[in-house]
Length: 111
Length: 117
Image 1 (cartoon, chains in turn purple, red):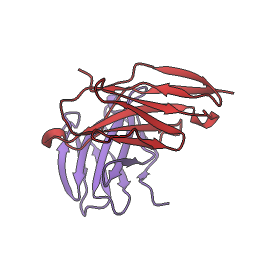
Image 2 (cartoon, rainbow over the protein chains, first blue to last red):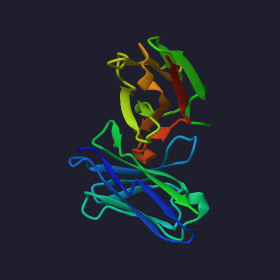
Image 3 (cartoon, each protein chain N blue to C red):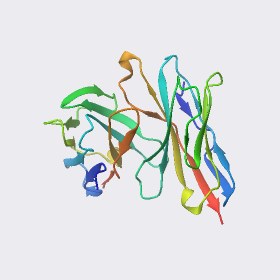
């Protein structure tokens, strides 16, 4: 399977804990995006990488959130000191333009 | 103002019939792209169809076509010959090309399509 891969698919964590998600994009895609989707809503943009450079960050990405793409391949999204409001689906996408291809997402539940 | 508006929270369609899902957008950028994605209950966003703002013809992909009316700023998705597997959430999205747009997709709130046997 050469699509976008995300791990884990599901994560349950206690409030205050740190969590890290991984995204492996389609190999030749230089653009990588993170989105957050809450129940009943469309995805909202969080951040964008072109190769290893983080070029855009949404105001939704508070200082508790950090994303990296160290070698321009896979990416990680870390949430520190999780809050119940962080419960959502976190979607990763990669692109050569115009269309973006999404992974199956990581569903985070903060209890 | 909302950049992408999908006014139909839910739609029913009879199997084998055609259905139109509405999408209107708002941008001052002369160059932009419009996208439709399908999200089944499994959660994955599946790319369906793309229309560039300068494309002269409406995009088509199999049973999907995009009714692009630039002056009205609408980009409706038409699904012909609906199948039970088409039951899902459908999202309209836009990418603007101006320098500070960031290359991201902006999504609408989605339409839940339910296909009746």
